[in-house]
Image (cartoon, rainbow, N blue to C red; front, side):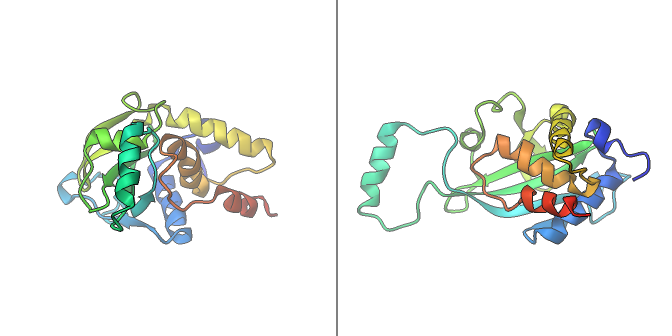
Length: 210
């Protein structure tokens, strides 16, 4: 794309964000575009393409281990209770465009096994300790509500590193791969136990074909 800084700086324009989002939605059916709040609509964005969302993503174990005695008590209770596993959680994952940093921004809304919204301290159990309360904060998403969100200040630099790795393997990624690289690198490092469906290797192989 003419004038793109994707390969050189790891950033993308809003038009490129839409292109990458369309490609993500076309390849992974659990992702979709959503309408935003009409009153908070960004002037540069189409009405329907306000943000991307993937709902009911399973998270079967904690990044931050719970206390051993809690595990033992839960295991004992499981011997007598055939109900749903209390460790099972689900997440809605949202992705918006950050016009300041020219990168995506990810939002996480967690639910317990009964569908109740998780308190922030519980969501932090599913976030890598290298990121909790440093680059991840709780902020209000206009459609999803209070969410854990990863601050995008270092996204461009991190994306540039992963782009360089692909380039070193003889793969020149196209800008429509941006969100897949973003999800399988930056987001996966922050939330390693949230099991959304994205396979960078398959897409990279396709991109490498002449």
